[in-house]
Length: 170
Image 1: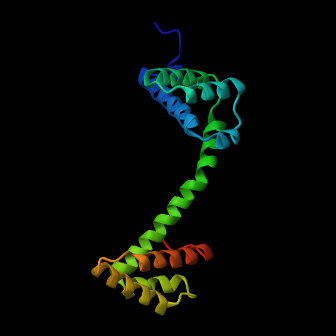
Image 2: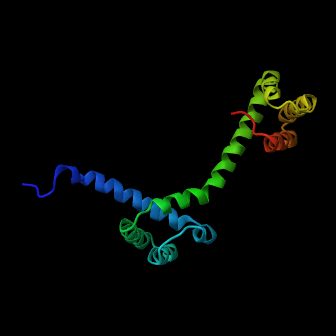
Image 3: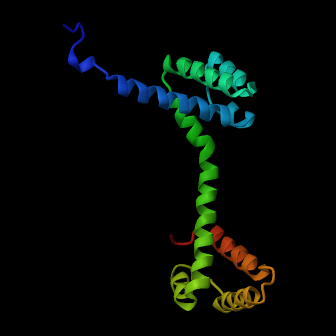
């Protein structure tokens, strides 16, 4: 009945999932800036297709070109391209994680006060606890008066400087 052994059989659903992955990979390539795209090793026909797709603004035509790009990507091994995209985008993700960690510590210090400060001092011994306590009091006063959050910004800058020396705990 089947000319293929069962080991080679790939379901239609799996083929669609694989096609969606390549479509998303092509979309990711098109969203990169020119400088980021130059950092990734691409075959010439795929680089041309990416450039062409990026120039198209009409929704349906853009989607059609993305499908063509995915078709081209099916013909090659895309692991190096996917890794290249991850390497190009990784610094931004790391910086976002760092800023979220600093914001979380600022919010914890504002909410928990001395208990959070004690925990922070356990990991960073060079902290000036009095300076942080003064900033926390200023933040509370400014929020009560509905004044601009200058002290909250100063606290964030202080925490960012501490994080630059050695990362704050998660």
